[in-house]
Image (spheres, rainbow, N blue to C red):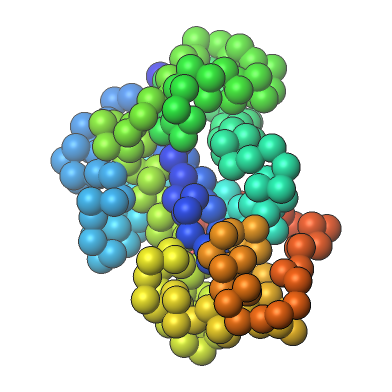
Length: 246
């Protein structure tokens, strides 16, 4: 039996990707998560998250744990906002990462999901409908609000997602040559970076053009109509290589 946790980071920011993380371990290793004090990433410092991230990837190399992330870029997020919405986007991403995991571990899975939908059962059902060859042998799926707080396996997934998202934000800061903060509209550093990211000559690719923050900034600073993002483009989501943890 394997325990599998799935969670996301970065649903709300105006800047950067949404990242989905998955952690899968043998059931007999569950005690190690408690001994390491793996917790919801929201309750950990930046330094502690990074240490846990390194530790989780080390266990993946040494003990057959499985760690994975999907980086969903802002153009796909905008496509979802213009279309079926963020809840369906998360359903698709959760299903995608579970299908990828299932290629390596095809049975005996106890899967816990952090539910973004107000209706936990609906979230679970929508994901299971998208799983390849479902039902899987001796596999259970439970979607739960605050699963990242209540279950260490999901807390581990939240750490993977959060640290990879932080790496993406650091990349944006390097490319821009200035701090961009957390990417949330309430962050002063993010607010100060908006003039460099939302220009009348073009909006940065790492900005979520569909966000109300962008519309308010545009209407305040420019007289031209806010452009609608061109939704065709390069890869909309990608796997984050575990080796990047080093």
